[in-house]
Each structure stands twice: as structure tokens, then as C-alpha cells.
Length: 319
Image (cartoon, rainbow, N blue to C red; front, side):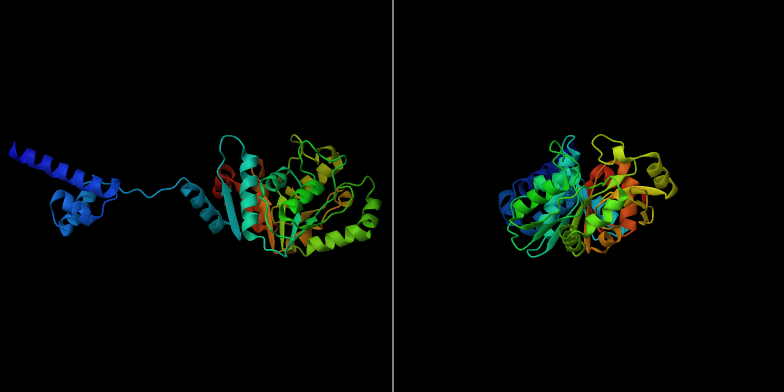
């Protein structure tokens, strides 16, 4: 009985010392005075408490799994930076928009040129961008406007550019031209117009571009290319092995442009000019975009990725 009582008393002492030190944040000297032992003896008791499993030290943070998958993506893909968003509830679009806005706030320097694409993810970034002081910046439209605009989505390029310029207190370079022209013969003359040529030339020299990344299936709700996927366009997409599109340019698994009949009707920054921009931020989420994202990164189309945790894990598992 005496041996059992001794072990119990030892455990009670270890628990008391551990709680004073770890839960009440007392110093070892304060604990020593409280229990009537020397400070070195208290130090030995704390070590014993850890050895016996009475104290288990766990190092963790809610963002730990996010940071881990970001590290894995940087190891597996040639990206300059990765931001993975946690999604509260089901608002994936809001989460990646907020993460992209945070990234832009961190990397955009006053005096730089910021070029913007269109789409829901870039619109979400714009809406989450806080008011910043970047009056020396210029915000540039990278592609034409969707006919009639998209007020419900707020994701047309001119709308996005205006909102971002307003939040930055910056200048904006826009062009009042359609994204898709009816006749391919109209495209080249439009791109030679002074305002269009100047805007696209400025976009090509941008310091940072932010663009959406789309999967190859353009038939989803609200997808702007759906009505233009005529049989000849679909055939060209399949024949070229396209896996995604950015700025409405289709590209293959190696990041090479896939030319389709729609290419000759699309008014946007040329694909090769986009690839020459030093930092292109791709903002996208969803399992249907995994291949498009991987190809865009490996093909040198985008250098920075913003996505959600679920998509990031799917990408990691593929690379």
C-alpha cells in the first residue's frame, strides 16, 4: 500500500508542477517556491512529466495543413508563390478572392502596372481588395468586353478594372471593344486602333497580371465561351489537345497555345505576350480545373497560384 501511495503522491506532484508551469504560466522559480523544492528539482520534475506522458506538447495551428500543402506545391511545381485559401462553409469563390486580394496587397508596389483579366475569380479578388494607397499604379484591361456586360456577376473586364483602380486610387487604361468579334476580318483593324493598341502594349509590359484559369469544358453556368463553342471550334480544341484557357486563349498540356477558329475572333492580349509578364497570378478553384492549372504552371503561363485547399490537394496528388 505504501508503494502505491508513493506512486500516487509522485503523480500528484508532477501534475501540480506541470499545471502551475504550463497552464498558469508560472516561472520555474515561482513553481519551486510554491511546492517547496529547488528550481533545478522543478526542472527535473517537468522533464519527468514529459517522459511519463503526463505532459504532451503539441505544436499546431489552424493554418498548419494549408501551409503544408503550399510547401508541397512549391516543391512539385515551378511556381514563385502559392496561396491556398481555407473555405468557411461553401463560399469557395469568396475565399480564393480574399486570398488573391491579400496576395495582391502584399506584392503590388506603387508605380507598377497591374493587368487584369475577367471572370468570377478575378471579380471576387477585386471585391475583396481593401482601399490601398497606390496612386502611381496603372490598372490595365487585358481583353475586350462581354456583349451587354454582366452586371449580375460583376465580372466583365472593364467593371473589374474600374473597381480595382478605385480601390488603389490608381489610373486605369481601358478599351471599349468587344471580346469576340463576329467577323475575323474585323479583329486586326480593331487591334490597330490607337486606344486598343496602346492598352494592349501597356498590358504586355505589366509588372503583374491577375487572370482566371478555366477548364476545357466551357458549358458550365455563366461561362462566357459556351455560346461560341461551335462544332469547328470544339474539333480544333480536341485536335490540339487543349486542357484549359486563359484570357480565352486555349492551351495544351505543355502550355502552348491551341489555335481555333475562335482565336481569330478574340480580342485579348496575345498569349505569348502574357507568358512574358514577370508575375502572372492565376486565381482558380475546382476539380474540373486541376489539369488546366497544372499545365498553366508547368507551361510558364502563370507563375503564382491562388486556389482553395481542396483543389490544392488534388493538384498535389497529381504532381
